[in-house]
Every structure is written in C-alpha cells, then in structure tokens.
Length: 480
Image (tube, rainbow, N blue to C red; front, side, top):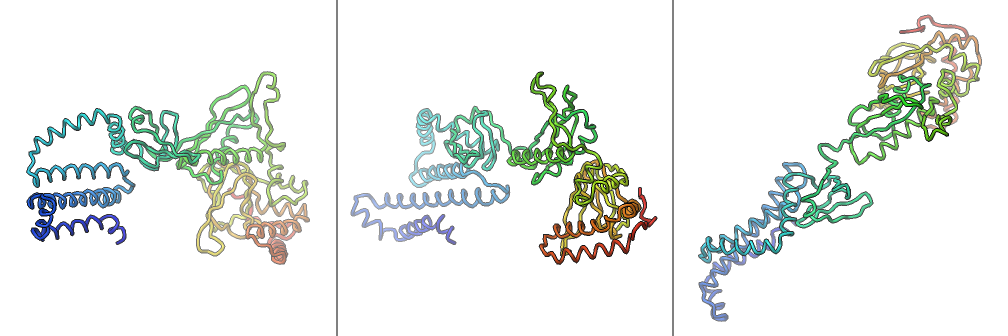
C-alpha cells in the first residue's frame, strides 16, 4: 500500500482535483476569468489538457513500473535495465502530448510533426553524441550484449561487473571495488567480452613437468585424484589429465578442468595446485624444470625424500603409525595389489569381505549413514588412507558400497594375512586396538579419555575373540 501511494498517490490526487474543477465548471472558471482576463472556454481547455496530461503521466508510470519492471521481469526471471523503462515512458508521454494538442487545442498534427521534425533535426545535430550514447544503451539492452550482474572486459582495458546501464554511461565495479563510468558512445565501437555468456562456467588448465621415473599411469592417477579432491572446487565437468609431450627433463602433463563459476577461478587454481603438491609430496614424485644449461643437472626438484613404495605407504597410513618398522615391512609383504577402473565397484554394502583396503593411487568414494541415522554423507579416500577397519579387525560387513572415482591402485590386507601377522608379531594385538580406538575418538570429535580406554578394551576383546593368536579363518581369504 505504501508503494502504491509513493508511485501513484500524487497523480491520483491531481486527477481527482481536476475532475472536480471540470465538474464545477463556471463556478471555478468565472472567477478565474474575471481575475485574469482570460476567457472561460480557454480555462476549460487548460483544465482538460492538464487532466489528460496527468492521465498520460499515470499511464506512462504504470507501464514502466507494473508492466516492464513488473510483469516482464517476472516472465523473464531477470531484472530489466531502467533505461528500457525510461525510454518507454518518454514515448508514451510524447504520444499523449500529441493527442492532447490535437484533440484539446485542435492543432493540425501534420504541421506539428513537420515543425517538430525540423526542430528535432536541429536538436539532434546539437546533441548527436548524447543521442548516440542513449541509442547504444538501448542496443545493449535489446541485443543482450551484457546485462546487470555480468562480468565484462572492454577493449582488454576495463574489466568489472556491470552495475548500471544508463542513458549516457555504463557503470562497472572492478575487483578492487572501484566504480568506472564508461561512456556508451565508446561502447558503440568497443570490443566487449562477456565472461558470463554462454554460461558462467570457465575452462581452466595447469601444466606440470614430471620426471621419467614416474610412469604415465601413476602420474595420471595421482594428478586426477589430486584435482578431484581439491577442497572447495566445484566442477562443471570431470577434469582430465593428458601427457602432452616429452621434454628433455621429463613428461609435460596438462590438467584441464571446467569450474562452474569463472569468479572462482583464482581460488580453484590455488586449491588444485595445493592439492597436487600435497599428493606429489606424499607420493615422493619429482617435479622437473630446466632453468639453464648450467643448472640442468639440478633441474629435478624433489617434492619429498620418500619414494612411493609399499613400505612407505604403510608407514604413512594412520592405522599403522605406531607399529615397528619390522611389522610394517611384514605388512607390505602380506598386501595384495588390486587395480580398479574408474566407476568400478570395490566392495558392496553389507558384503562380508573381511579385508582392509589401503589406497596407493587415485581416489575412492563411499556413501554411508550419518551417526544420527538421518541422512547420508560422502566419504572419500585418497593415497595413504584406508577403509574396511571394522570388516578386517572385527569381522563386520562393509557398511557401504565403495566405488572408484578414478583409476585406483589399492592394496588389500585379508584376514589370512592378518592372522599371519598376529602369529609372527603378537605385539600387534596390543598396539592395534589402541590405534583403532584413537582413530574412532578423533573421528567422533570426543575428548573423553575414559571413552577411549573403554574402546581399547572393546577392540582388544573382539579381536582376540575373532582372530586369536595364529588362528585364521579360511573363509576370509583372498577374494577377487
């Protein structure tokens, strides 16, 4: 109601007042004629013209506010620039004034158009730049070159987000929160790049040179998994990794990815580079570069001092952190190598496959119930991470289906292998329950020491009951 009064209140009051004046007729016009010396019929024409003018203004405002910026905006689902509404309102007023001159004052429209045309021509020459600027603004809105909210680049000189398209200028807001007023006259001949069209998605890429010690398959798996696991990055399409060319210092890999919003480009690059460096550091892979012939012998840059072998992989896994090196070495001997293609299933929900899987390269995903049972949560596992603790140590079925998101190299520790380990290294029956309890407490976020001790006793009792010392269950053997 308040908006209606603000938009139309004064015009409605003016119309009501003029209607009352015209209804009173001579009661109002006679005193005015006596006081001013202007004939009563002339006063009647002025009053009728004023009434029609207010009705024209009311119509123009209604079309601008309710039709263009109301119905049309709701139909199109996006805001319509004010310039379109302003021009439409001016056209309605011009037509209304012409009708008033013709119907109220009995003026010949042909003469008016001719006289007005000559006057407009003279005025147009004087205001050529202003008219071209306004016409350019109209074309921008009608051709949808860009709209409010789009990020544009003009002549490779100005870059920013469009915040206003006016009669004379278009306003951009830069990344530094500065407002730039660009004359529409300049836009008529400018090269404009709209980064929001056809969609806000943006293709981006990185290149990295890796030495020849790393196989193409391993590099592809690690780089793809690192890209997919980059924190906070939203992909519009799956990324890809290609070996681009063979250089003197190594193989050049190109990582291509498409993000959903170009505005997140810098953040996405940062997150992906950070993730790649971390994965390469964990894998002990070298990055190569050649600065000059003199420095060629030093062009290999070691990301980490650890090589990617099964022993270091086991030692990096949180589950085996506290085990002696001799035990870790024995675990590496008991591991079974598994290769899975992208989108392939590793285990099914409820499957009684009593095995632990340690990820060597790539990434896997499983979807499981939340702790309160009211929803699902996605869990992803990458290099050095493992799943299946409950299945191996406690004889439980796997809680959820696990699927390879990329090509995956994994290592499986079966119940037979675990029984062998317990028989050869009985101390692991004491160390592993404490590690399992600690991981559970970290995962739950609890700080209760008594709860951790209770979990240690629970795990130890269950493991001794299920596995014993040197006892194995042939049904838990190697499963393809």
